[in-house]
Image: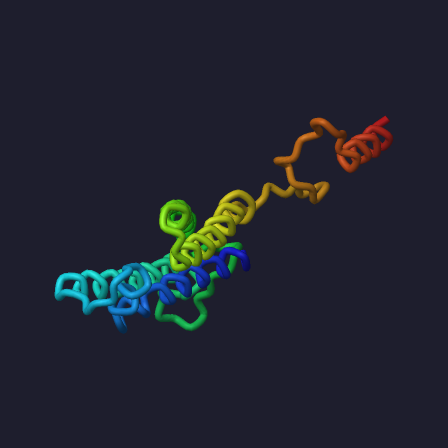
Length: 178
């Protein structure tokens, strides 16, 4: 589950990195994305700062709902993988993965249309986090089904290659029984 926690902290960090210039100085964003440099209007400043605060809030929510920060008041409460304390970890992972995927495609589309490097950086960061999120969704979000007898994962199949460990275990069982 270490990759999952790294993904959630990476998501929070990426959102905080994007939110900081929006909150601190909306003029920087206008200078990066607009050919003429001008002061932002009151409405642009309001939307910029409210978007930055929203991105910070979403980043904090991703970390809190992932279960990496215990939300109980007792000191002996842990968030180990055997007894998950975060029932919203997989839905949070799914929603943040969809967000990073959508933002990656949006930034790439704008970069290919305008050629601005700010969109290329956004596409790179969101694309990287989306690929890690997909990996976590596919491989690290479920506890495997481990056999008590052989210690092998029960979800594997023998197609197109034979499972030699399983075949040798069956032969040993047949020799003992016969």
